[in-house]
Length: 199
Image 1: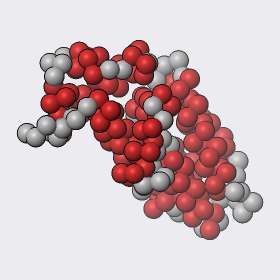
Image 2 (image 1 turned 45 degrees about the vertical axis):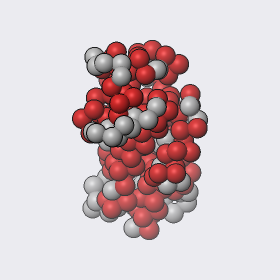
Image 3 (image 1 turned 30 degrees about the horizontal axis):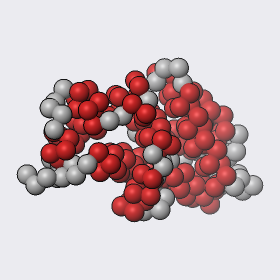
Image 4 (image 1 turned 60 degrees about the vertical axis):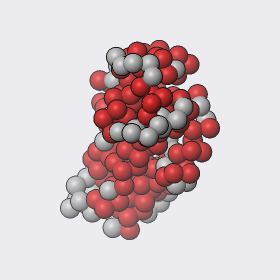
């Protein structure tokens, strides 16, 4: 195995350990030694598979941003089916909230990672940008189908929905509260502007 190339199992083991460290101790305590100790592996394993710790952090941010983007990508295709609020809740909560919280905290602590994510995945993929874009596209499609009021600004509503997720995942006392609080807020915001038409 060439130095700096991680096999999938090792990547995910180390990524999961990094998430636990950030969740428990915050991003300021994140280090290569902290990650390998949390993972229960030799301290040299991380550097055997990644060029350096910055490369590891970039790989983690790209991996998790891809998960968020992939989860949101299918939302516009659901226009005209189910309920508008239900579709948005499903898409916005499809990535585990704990993962979203860790990614956001890391990008705030290490803003240079945002640029690396965008270089690899595109301009609207860092943080919650992918969810915001997908939600705006979806709401526009629903508006064209007559299921969202014509007066609604889809982009503004999408931003508000992402703001709910951002606030709740970073402030919830327990992760078990996140789904309930996000669903309640999204439902309240969206049902107020959806028509009675259901398909």
